[in-house]
Image (cartoon, rainbow, N blue to C red):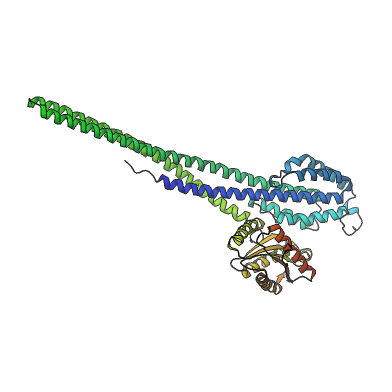
Amino acid sequence: MAEAPTASTEQDDYRERYEQLLGELGRLEDHDQELGGLLKLTLSRVLFAVDKAYPELADAAARIRDKARKQDEHAFEVGRLKGELEDLARRIRELEASQPDVDDQPEPAPASHGTHNGSAAHVREVLPLLLDRIAFVDSLEGRRARLIAAIDDPSDRTLPSILIDRAATLINDMRQAIEKEKGELTRFLEQVTEALADIDQFSQAQSDDLAVQRDARLKLDDSLRQQVDDIDAQVESADDLDGLKLVVRERINRIRQQVQAFQQGEERRQEDVEADNEKLRQRLARLEDQTRMLEEQLKQSEAKLFRDNLTGLPNRLAFDHRVRLEMARMRRDETPLTLAIWDLDRFKEINDQLGHQAGDKTLIIVAQTFMKLIRDVDMIARFGGEEFVMLLPTAAGDDALKVVERIREKLARTKLRYRGREIGVTASCGLAEFEPNEEMETVFSRADDALYQAKEQGRNRCVLSADPVD
């Protein structure tokens, strides 16, 4: 009988991959939920801007805000608000169209939050920060870059309502892209599930076949033993040699027929097993090819989902994943853990005076400096805009302060050149050491307060938060 494929090994291998793929699906769902939260945050901030810029639309904005607030941000669906948002956008366009043409207006007054100009400035300031926090797939990255370039362009005359609409559409398209990827992964998991069921069925069939084979051999043994016993009895009682020969010849023919029937049955079973084996091998080979392709896609997607597009550093999603692991390790091993929040000083002036490209170059150089100077166990991630977050495992607050001070001093000595101009870079940092049972939100708030103190004390310095008050 031909040797069957190692079904148990194949089964264990595919079960392991199945669990890995489930993990990938979970990460995609986490990113989808984060996008939902960002979309809800974007909508909330835009509606507050509408309140200030268009008082006559405050009631409509408030109604949309109330409906959005009732939705869970982890399952936020902007489509439920489509009618209200389209009506609001139409009314904004009508109000903007009723304003005098820009070329006919006198020199505008300084922007304020109580004017349409102030609203436009606020929208152009907030949207890039929100778009920077999202890891877009390659097919949408070009649209994101063009939208940010248009927002940053001082000569761009695109209405704020249109910029908002483009940003919301882009974020929604990203969610749809993730949903598509989740759908493809789910369908593949179903195929893996079917393959595992086939392997289970094949293993059971092999077990049943072995049982049938054992029964057939036992029946053959019993039959042969009975035939031999009959021959012995005939020999003992035989008086006629010719008659004995006839009986023995008949018994031997019966034995030959039974052995031949057994062999034929074994050959049929062997052919059936070979055919089943071949089908299973082909099925697993196809699944193996699909698995390799999907694994490669997942690696690329994971790299994209967990990496900041500009700097190459881990992004906020990667940070959220890592901080959960580090907090669990801290509590399990009773080791210290410190959070540091960095913010580049006067970064907006670089963007305003030298342009977005100069700002991008600054962020890239700063990210490279961070990566060179952090410890092997540390993690640095871009949190959004000019803000970075750092985790320092096994470092108490005072020890972490020494680490970040060394980085701050190095950054302060860094000089960049852009189109013949020298750019100085400094950064402020706030730190907070985790308490054993303290939640991430509380630690982050304390570190953020310490960062604010560093800014208030003159920037280019690091401040360690005091222990939380019980």
